[in-house]
Amino acid sequence: MLSWRLFSRIQYYQLRLIMKKQYSLQNIQMLRAFAAILVIMHHTLPHYKAMGGNLTWVTHISTWGFVGVDIFFIISGFIMAYTTFSKERTILNAVTFFKHRFFRIFLGYWPFFLAMITIIFISNPNKLSTLDILGSFFLINANMFQLVLPVSWSLSYELYFYFLFLFTFLFSIKHLYILIPSFILGILFLVLYSYFTPTLPQSFFYSPFLLEFFAGVLLYMYKKYLMKIWILPLSVLLMLFSYWYGITHETKNGIYRVVTFGTGAFLMVLIALIMETKNLYQSHKYFTILGDASYTLYLSHLIILELFWMLGLRGLFQSSTPVLPLLGLALILLLCILFSILYYQKIEKPLYKKAIHHTLIFK
Image (cartoon, rainbow, N blue to C red):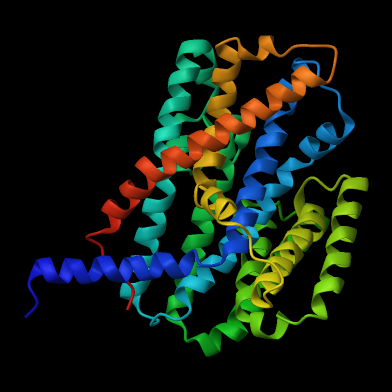
């Protein structure tokens, strides 16, 4: 029999292989970094305007920066399929999958939850009575206006998607090629029916965002048919049209958001995959490093923005000319990026690896 030390060592190298496989898609990591920066710019817009910034291109990009979340959702579905579809369809692997996802979500989230609640307690303690502390802590509330860390609304959808994805381990891959498209059609029916029929209210449990997650799964399932050069220009045109239509018609919520910005995100990920698969473009390693730290970037930027304001740094960049506000925006982005990379490398990554070291590895 293998000694426990040797067995743990084998598990460690298995984990390294899994992590290497998961993060070998450099263009996907680049898109993660891009999506996180879009979200940061969206939340930085009030500070940019308070500094006197009024450049049209900055305001326009920041206004629509929330679409970075749709990119995250598509990527999440793709990565879940990418990392699990080659594994045995067993209950043990399903439990292992959920453990790893649970650790990944909460170990990354809870430190920033605690940091934000501390900042709120210091700066505006009365606000705590308006927040759902318990729901925020366990990510069981998706209403951003009631959350300690408002961006965590998307993590509630992530957890729900992981829960639904668990059931894929009950079926063979062959059956999933039938069941997943059928499930997507079922969700689409409920979304449309609830939209046009007041008697069936819209619900978190059949949110249009689920269509984005499972669109990412479909992208992985049918990628061998989609990695064609001729699809690339068509995807670029359709992506540009999707974003143009979504922006000009302001489709910020519900099924219209998914149809426009969700479609645009799907096509963006598809374009990135084709570019890398066909050796047309592979992102630089620095984008990959930032992509690795994108979860930290996503969670930490609101705290950095609060500190930027509380410490009086925003006032240093107030000006009626465009230069100083733009420098202030650049400083915010730089602080967010440097902190996220350092925190991910020194704290988040080692903590996650340690947490799953003694859990069973996929077979």
